[in-house]
Length: 474
Image (cartoon, rainbow, N blue to C red; front, side, top):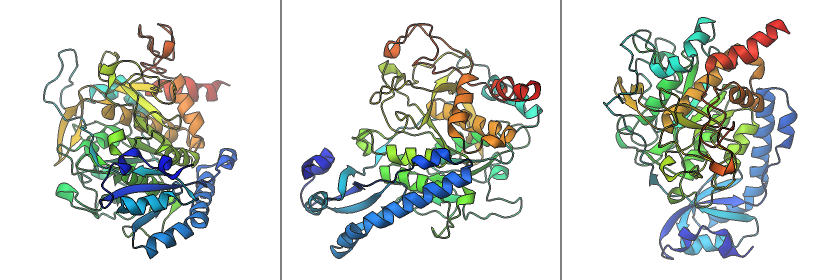
């Protein structure tokens, strides 16, 4: 391939002496096919980790030596065989000419304009009185699962977002780094923001949310939040959470997203050392997207990262995006476009799709998207500084599914690491929802479709109608 064709066009537009950030993808990538044949999450994880690290070690040595000799700032990754670097465009061109280099992606910050809370409640929405379970949690029948004894116990959910207000009353007792008297953030928190960082600063040594109201804090509340009193806001209050900050005040990059996935694959101490694969989460929530302006001009910039995480037995839940006003084919940004990402659209309290929820098919891969839908309109959850607020967006919908995975695995620990089975069960147990929209040429009334996917999730159906009862009676 001619060197120029390897380079993101935006990088070529820079002044030749201007410094730019980029990701160097190497030609050889790990073959992880064997992971599908391994029976447990731990075995999958060990195998995938070894293959990824060995591939990076064997193939990065020469180019790292070149970068060091030329005083080019760089950082290697193994989650995919790639290297982050910063240099002038002239130096970048020399790197692209190397035979072992496959692609060079821009690594740019971009304000995602994440959802913000609103004090208004739509007249069509039911707002429950203080002390009751939130309407969205009740609607998907999570309390019926709790009553049966399954609250997410024994399961760890991961979140990568704007950070987390870890000692929020609804979150502190669910944080894996808190033992009810003291905190240990080693293996439970990682900060991928190394400059800037708003009120948190860079390289925060404890979970911190730097985004206005607390976008990450809101999403984590919907996953596991419960203050033990009048704020039952989470799907899986018996689960534990760990987190990674992947955005600087709402601005992410391909590198910061990749760094969080790499840490989840092998959590480390606060110094980035002594990785422990046994402390990985079972599922990761991703209420964000990577547009072209942020380095995903090539829509496949994050595909290997997502694929490799999934191969290691971790469920990757993502929001589809809030571009539904554009109509069909508006699922148009990574990671929602990938088959390996379990994509979630947003519904209201009447189980109708919201106007903002992106419709499939996937703009680039032509896959049916979303996979399922969940409440994402006027969802009340935790926000920064120990407070609560409502927000709308597919960012609010995805955490319901992440929490549902935790409920499912607390009832069926034999499914841990079996990503295909977990996703299939959630899809087939969803409340069917049809539409007159014919996105992707799917006839009106057909299920699944590119508006609702397989339907709106139902926790009780997931655990009982399709799992527990068949085990008892057959």
